[in-house]
Image (cartoon, rainbow, N blue to C red; front, side):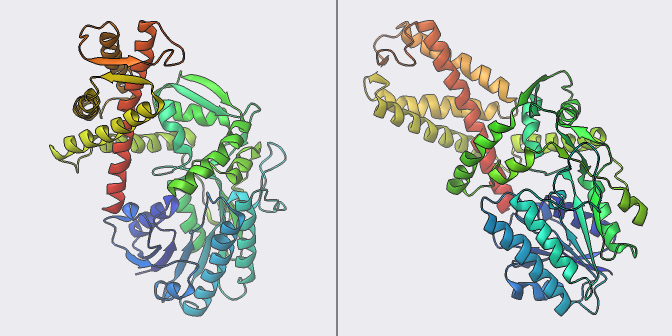
Length: 472
């Protein structure tokens, strides 16, 4: 049985590559870090090795007697240049040395998955090819180019090949997928005021190409772009997402690139507190701001017959179907059993409600009479009523949750304002909120907060459920 070693095996592309290798009868060694989310590999017949490409001693065992090394591990959304240099350049060098020292007798190919960012953007709509002089303009792209140089330097001692994927989409992708929820609402955010041109590749096509490049005898010491030849615009991209969502006539609006540049530092700051993967970084915003990310895959077709089978529309349909199925599963929360699920919703709602009431008390936004009504509000209103409704509505759309929660909360606020029950209730501070004194408008505005509350509770419960899936 052919033996392969895959780094970054639990990542987006890596997990798809592992599945394709298993389908072809490979025995697969997977390198994962101690803190890795292993859910993409659950149930797969692979050998898991805990280690790090920055710890050379952990590379010895998974490298022994392998015939193919697929090196994908890298940082994509780091917030500092040094992190890219360490994980991409130093990490790749460690992998090359380990392959030379511990797999030289059996190794048929060391395949390094680089990036189109290593070549940098083009000057116009004409696709660049592998003969173009690389001019990376991001920290990430520069690090990938220096890692390519390291791979070439080992080319006389071990068999190496480099592939440069373009923008990749598919099941379990984390960046382009940020637009899916927006498109489901009938909105189509188009990146940039000026038209941007790019090429993309479906992950299923990409992993076939990666394996094809490694197995071919014509690819030694070569570099290959990997993408579908179709040149797209940012408008084409969001249109394809919307079409796959069955929302082809949504409202399209431009998102100026400078807004992403402004948002990037805040996203990085949030990352520092939460340690979650940032939604955008300054480095990624620099890449996105370029207009021409177009490349030609012709060399790959010429040398080993690889072509991307899925254009954007067909590939996106597969992607969106998988996304919707995953969302439905998360909303259903099949691993949670009643009444425990209901209890968790009630506790979560009570906790958020208590935070809101504490904030209101500190700001003196309103006063309860009698004061003990605040306890009833947190337990009964936020906990039992809103918690129960959030659980019952968890499978419904965010818009349904928002509108229904708004109506319910507005009715309660209006009832208090009209003093239907004058012995109990709450009195607002003068001019709160926003200087609104009209009871009808104020009830609607505060009712909207109730709708948002339902959405937040369900969002938090989904995050907790996803964490449970990752932990296992």
